[in-house]
Length: 127
Image (cartoon, rainbow, N blue to C red; front, side, top):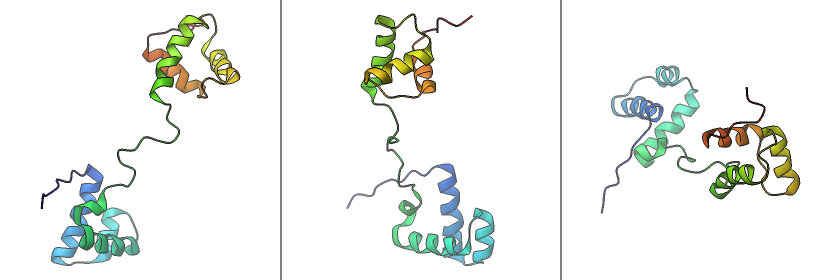
């Protein structure tokens, strides 16, 4: 049986240490609840999870997943290319509208501005 190494983030590590101390040495749930800024009922759930799964219980479930509203990587690479080829005279807000109108890419204006600025593209309205 291989042992898997669990790496916790700082806040997860703090939660684990407080609950582990409570499980190993006893103490008040109320004090642990104050330390973690949560309810005593949440402390009870953490104690049960710690006994059942150990450190794995404290890893957030969505760690490592891409957000559902994130742009696909091919869309991120298409935006600067389309702007350079076809829409170089449009400002970023207008360019965003044109992308949505043509049905190519649905992205917010701030996302388009960020992608283009990362690609060192300046708006024609820039001073």
